[in-house]
Image (cartoon, rainbow, N blue to C red; front, side):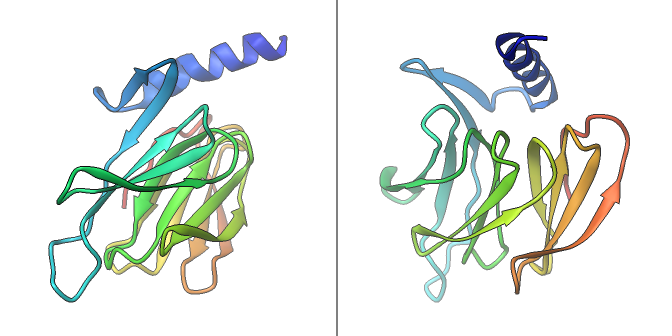
Length: 166
């Protein structure tokens, strides 16, 4: 299979695995919209939406109060999913072609965590202690300890996992 055929296959299967309405093409850029925000609180950060920009290798952070882009952060190759910790302090971004997860805090990448091959989904536990990353090509899930940003377990799963939720 050529590189082009492989990329077409991945794109087709990625689209099939995504919830309807989250995949968009805007100005020639494939966007995976993964909106996440904290609860509105005067003690916490402002509610934000994190949008993965697949072909730009970046994440746009939008202030949901003003509907304006706060900043755009460079991440790994082909980001496809993002999950935010319950306290809103960090966003975990699955970079499909890099085989890693970028950790965003205070509008910049503070850590990069190596995971399995072709990560396509990420979910944070309700208590905010772990991130679960579905690695499509390695048929496993990486478990990240968010306190240390290290992989603490790798769980074998079925063929081509595509989504995760906790």
